[in-house]
Image 1 (cartoon, rainbow, N blue to C red):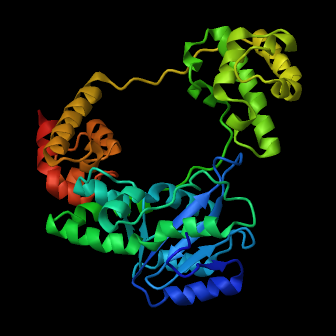
Image 2: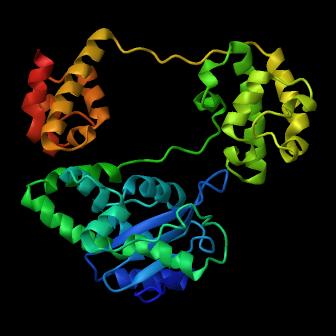
Image 3: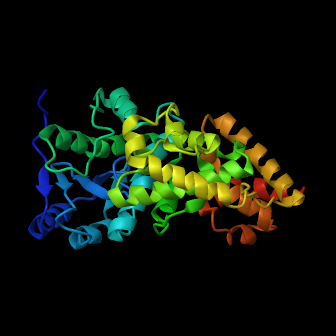
Length: 376
């Protein structure tokens, strides 16, 4: 079925960026989304940036532009223009990582839905229930790094921003009706301050594989060697590690510790092709791991009893607040703020104002109750 909307304008050069910047100048708000290739590359990157105004849709192809999207950077930083996302956290981190974009004046429709206590917060569900618009999700796991993109793929990408401005308008009315707009805005502001972690290879991440912590110390040392081999292979061929060798397969190899390639047969996921490609290297990794010292999973440093007790009291208070309002607990106060309260034990409203994770709206709404809990 053809789209009822005009085709989006593809932005792939500096002249296109300038046209987009001019189109954004008169608007008070525009909507944004990104598409990345996290399921198809070792290190993901932003492959598309979708932008919609009330009149027009744009799709930016960053590949020919590199990281230089200067005219758009100014629009994102402009506090006079609101940027509307759905589930903004991931997009913000990706945009900051790849393009050093700074954001002001954010509206996140998922945050708004959670603040309102709506039972459905996914974009497809919201658009269908509010506007009777059904999104086509067949390209949800597409490889956005390939070129050229089909007309259907581009239309799919465009629809993630096409209706966000209308949804925002509806939500502002609902938030004002229940006097919750300021609460949502405080969370919007928190999201704009997020910063991405620098990319690095974490060779201790093998402990996060399913079943890794149930292995013996010798098996865990083997798994560590196998994990390092898989990371190097994934980096070399630019694929996510799980597409080189599956997580469960890697753990099974560590458990069985095959001494030659014939013993790899029968391990789930170890096809003839996998054995041909990786068999010798896996057996060698097993040997190196077997000769290494046994390893044990790292243990987190436990919080002191008084801090944990304060945290539990605060958490129970938050759970009751959320239940009475019909929202998720972190809508009331984020988990980071609970730990900060429990560790720093503020005594006065002035102390609360020094906390990093408790904004002014929450201080005004819950400050006295929080101080009373901490005084007990």
